[in-house]
Image 1 (cartoon, rainbow, N blue to C red):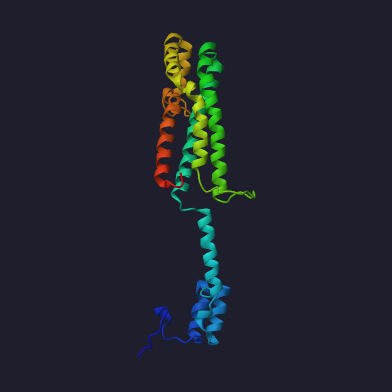
Image 2: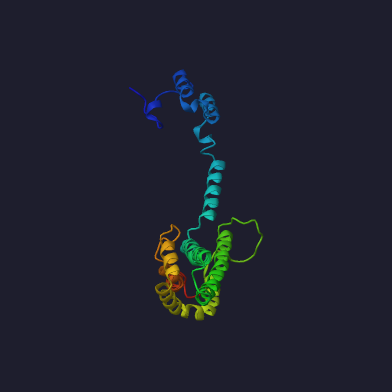
Length: 247
């Protein structure tokens, strides 16, 4: 009757020094692996399988170290994932602002299609907002870099958080209230000008057909207002995540 031993069913009942086992392993893809060759020799000499490097204390310590490094690279704190969301959406938002500040500006200047007064009204409102968000995005990127341990800078402090960056920049954003309040005026004047000036109307419509303008142009002009609502939701989620003591 075949002897029942733990391990692979294929190898049950076969001694470690059996030529069939040696032949089987050496012919397999694992045969060329030095670790398996060493283990096979050890088995033939009667060594315990518990001494295998894979199962040794040293091997377990290495696994724990790898897990710790993985935890540092990929934090599980909910605030971290909220911070990653802020980073991703802020990058998208900045590109949306560039549709106006870079691409639309270039189109109207090239064709000399927009009156100087309207140019000033439009871009004097959106340019400061764009510059603010460039700095804000840089702060978020730096914080996430510290949080994930991707920087070699030796810095002190608790950088595994995003609330302080958000609050500081939300206070700074209040300075742009007057610019945001003029958005209705900008939209109204732009609409009037496109109806009155055929060249501007043509440039406007042609620009909306370009790949970079993947939404109606008015939608991009409304992005700063919509972004404020997004920040309100984000801050609400952060407040729910943290305890009252943390706040």
